[in-house]
Length: 382
Image (cartoon, rainbow, N blue to C red; front, side, top):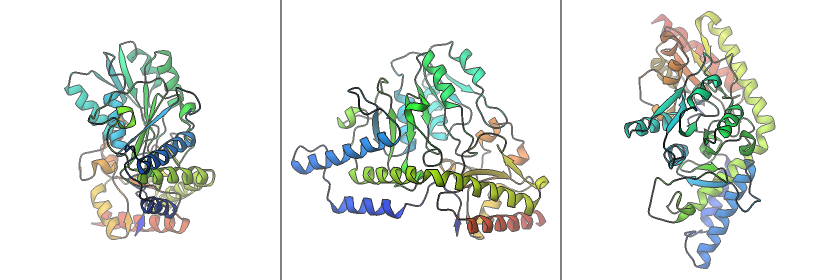
């Protein structure tokens, strides 16, 4: 099996597994306990939190420093941001038309509770139209949420420019950076966002943990209650072991990035070129090819081929890929992201997502291209 579904989750790095194992062997107890064993766990948890913040370029040296709230993953962190940021402000929320379901469906829930939700349109490459944001911000706005890099197409958004506009209007901006960490340089302060979501299982870390990074001045209202952990912003006993795995995975991802980023882009481009050569440029479409993209993600479509049938055929042929967001797996509905981009229906129905990692090799890419070509040609004959 060749795995090219890394946007869904990545394999855990050996060093991360070792760090987690060693943490369990160290028998960290409840970090909220007052005894010495609990205090030891608290110190190690706080060390991991500070290291993660520093690696992300957050401010940790001032009295009022940036904060990091551990969650169960990216979905919880996104929900925490959407339901908790700007809650004291009466007004609308604004999201883009190509957000992950953990944002778009959370926005739907807010809309059902009477909150006005506005949607920023995107162009044919899936990039938001910044000229549309100023008129929308003319109304009272509690928050804006736009992802850094799209989980289906890899398209990057102009977050710094958007952040500057939001700052001028004193509106908090949340950024879902889940797919960007470990693939491109991400500096929280440089982005200018008020809050940012990440989760380590997207960069060879553990599942079951994520985080929401918060600017020093932004207020977050909790969505859960029943404890004082994490300043009561997200109560519940923290997992020291998973936090240590998170820390180690981020360290490794950032250390590897100068080589890994260009390598993934080279392999991604090679894969698309091979598919074009093997199948024919008029028989396939690379969605978002002309836009700014994350280096490891390719959304390719084969008009006339059913995407579900192709994914199943590839699975039987030993290629693990997907039709889009893992959080929408099992859904046969067309991708809202591709619809928002104005992609034709026959292209959407034949699209699959291929996502690489820093461990993907050139022979694997060549073999994936060969197997996809064989499956596409066989399905066209049937």
